[in-house]
Image (cartoon, rainbow, N blue to C red; front, side):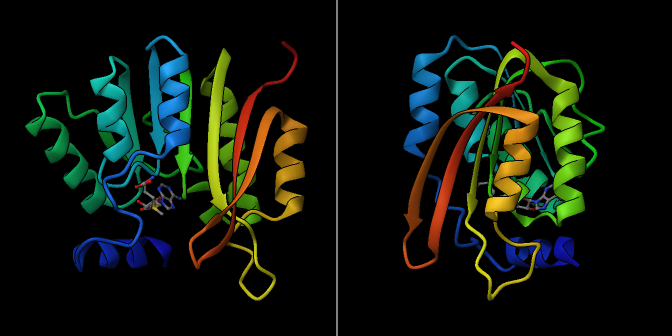
Length: 189
Ligand SMILES: C[S@@+](CC[C@H](N)C(=O)[O-])C[C@H]1O[C@@H](n2cnc3c(N)ncnc32)[C@H](O)[C@@H]1O
């Protein structure tokens, strides 16, 4: 159902989030870390992936909307980069091979059901490098919405029971409501 919703949003034009602007939190991370392997989960049309590649990262992207993947590939090819973007589901990540030093998720994880979020964490734990960072952005859960949109405090505490939260920044996304950025590492380092 969600897949159809996203397909239609991409088909009908430029979805609300597809601004072409790289968030300052991503710019800050990239400026502070040497370029290595990055994975953008729910990469949409590839704005952040292109930025990472321009900064020397070996970037891969996945999205379950084939139209978003098509657009991201076109964008990367046009800029002279390999179109390493695949149709895949965040809960399985079957196309992401090897280890990633930077995993970015802007607006995908927060769309998952509680079971989907747990499956996505299992998948990320298999591919996040020992010294890697998973940077997650989502809307905060609003009790008037369903459980498969937004990050509840319960979700955040589950995430931080499985990963080490090194930073949390709460914010506000325009009129949309509260949002949150999380910086996560593997536990046991
Ligand atoms: C709000 S958009 C953000 C896109 C992109 N990260 C950006 O910042 O422009 C969320 C993206 O996640 C994708 N998505 C949602 N659920 C997904 C899932 N289960 N697996 C893979 N991609 C998913 C959607 O197709 C959409 O492209």
